[in-house]
Image 1: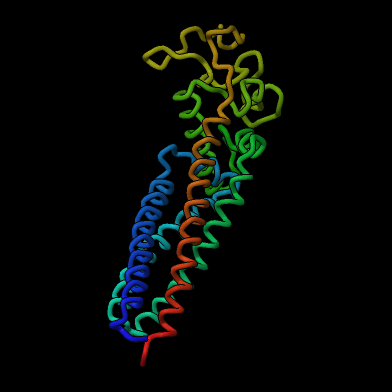
Image 2: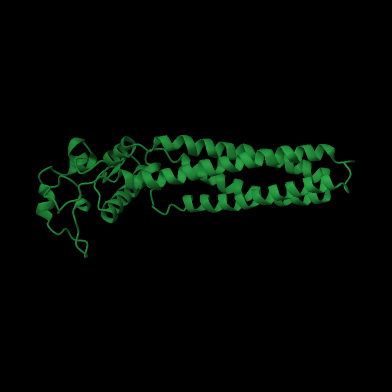
Length: 260
């Protein structure tokens, strides 16, 4: 391929533009995944307690992929400008490897969105919340994390249980075994609190009097952020894959036409 040909230069410009976009997308993907794994809503203990934390694994892969895409885009730009077959061959091979990792990340994130069901969180709440006799140190650490997370969720978001306060009465739980239904039908974090964090009417809360306890569940508060982040990791990654696919094909064609 003649380097001075105007058509070649135009094709080079397209490849450079394609790699610039890949590099920018790589930075954006890394930033998005870092925000996700930083767990701003501190919901990770709930997923870990149900062995459903693979979505975080997908995000960690996304961090690696985003960083790799940025660096490979620089390699690709330099290789195109210099029409260097060796550099472009390295670019193609490494990009294919990175592409495979991102496919795995997208599939994991997309499939695990379906696992954020009320029953998933209900079971771990009933089994782990305020568990005084965990089977092992790991279970103790997990139970403490679940308890802190649920207490914070119910207090900050004025919600109770997964579907509502009735969860604590309709199902046998560790909390129910340690507390009678008449004395503590649900945790005190379900009560409406004053500015000092004290129930405004504890007896009214225990009796389920409207205005003294929170009667909505916490499921939407949990599933909303998790679904949004999983959707972002999966579909933004898929969009990057679509763009990268065509840039890779064009790069392979350009590499095959470079003169020795």
